Image (cartoon, rainbow, N blue to C red; front, top):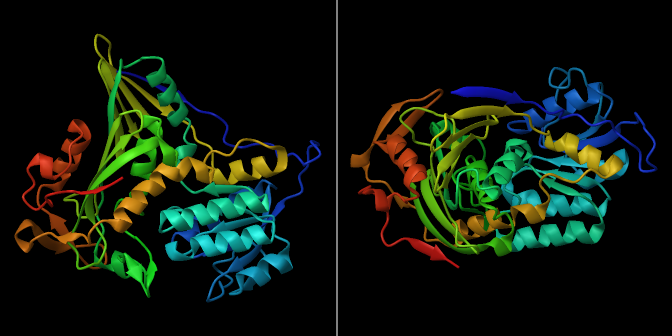
Length: 405
């Protein structure tokens, strides 16, 4: 097997709106700096060291201490997001807050003229997504959705290979995600593991949150990223843990071009593995391990070729867009198909509990976890054969499947 590395520069020289080079850093406010937000804090520090941004403010219910802010000086802190935007004059707002707050906070940032990096999923419903995306367009600000996998240079490279017929005619796209999460994961926040909370949609779940990248990446590689690219959706939603949302699920999307996209995901794997997307063609296949930017091309009559690609950091790309007009990698419109899947999950019947005979308890990292027997092989078989759990003979899978159009 031949192997090569294709690395591109993820950095961009900042340019002012007049077109002249500038090193004036853009003031950034981070909303949600703990949990997953910590990764944004680390990334802001990286870009601050390069002179592209400066952390002007942090919105948290409990202020960060000196150790958490090491290397940042003393950014302003407040639990009042809008007051913080006003007092700091933030040009960019990074939002890493609970799913059900995304629309309101994005619109608040837009009202203050701040460009937005919004964590995935963009919203808990299609209606909220439309309200958010229409609002930022009306305000004249840019919004980037935090699907980091879509910043990978592998995505356009694979799409180019498919369009050029490298693997023949496109037959379909399958994605597989097998992760391990223990009971503490579903207690990490009040909204975790919920479909609704306090009357508001949350729609947390394997397909819509932790393994949402598998869904969005599979759709992008199929050429169906916008809402109008989706024809219909089938879901199979289940859970082994004692939660309201799904932790073991599969979905089939048929695109308006007739391409079948399936995603199988579980947080109850026997052992954790790297999630991946497989593009099936009549003369070969392309496998993309999207967290590693690693691509394997297998074609009839040729040896396999493995390539590692670079990727654009999405906050850095947003800075480049704001300062000198570089195209956004993941604007809201490019997540419309993903949001159609979120809506199908939201409106589907509540997930079914997997019978106790089909899962077992094992020690987890910080709490017990539940393991669904044989689910790892089923997830792989789904990606390989473009089939749902029920079609693979899983006795615990729902039947008939829920469908959304």
